[in-house]
Length: 320
View 1 (cartoon, rainbow, N blue to C red):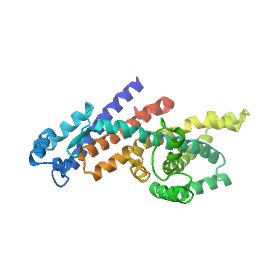
View 2 (cartoon, helix red, strand yellow):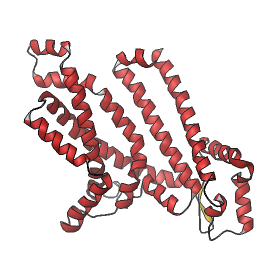
View 3 (tube, rainbow, N blue to C red):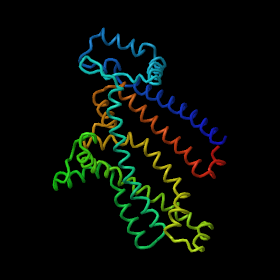
View 4 (cartoon, helix red, strand yellow):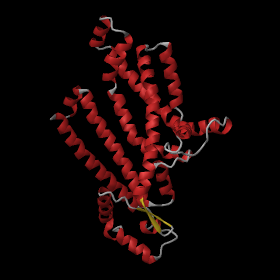
């Protein structure tokens, strides 16, 4: 029952947050200088077309009418359109083509970051204040001081332009050529994964150091259990809740955070599409894409909250 109660609370919370976020987005669009309908058909719209579009989008009914028309359509899966060259392209087609690309980039970055952070965090904590711990901490602190976009530009200049090991821009679907797909994703993935690795390593190291001081770990060591088994079976699981929470939060945040990386490497993902919609002044597309990113952030946040309670029941009394 505790899990069901928590699930109900999270669903209600998600609904409130998403509704509030979409209303604020609609308000921001409403406050833009000029007529949103005129922006959508800039250069190709007659006064009659603009007036018809205003009625279609309920712009003539005030901010509440405009927001509710867009939000109710969004809830039913009607994401709106791109208005380009006098024609329309359904946003559902754009999202179905770009979202998998962004999710690929995020998943690759998460896999690389977690694969590096887990052993680094465990060993650093086990050898606290030792040479290995100091080297890892200093190296990761140095790397995390570089913004993701700066690291992307530096790696692109060195490995793509000067050394010629990889192409600086482009994307190939894995279904067409898996090897080329992975080769083109190396630099974008590393640009994101370096910062994540530093954050995850420090979080895990802190929690593992605290867990190693628990009585049951001391008891396990006194029974002659190997250090490797203690770290992986007795220490890692209770120390991983903060790491899981951070990874899940980053899943939602990285969808929006990939805008710069996808733009630098010309990856046709959702982040690049947001950047394009802003430049093309496609306010409906921009509004819808940002709303979906907000929903993703809230969804992953709520999901990991529930999973954390399943993995570590000790948190239920504090959260439910």
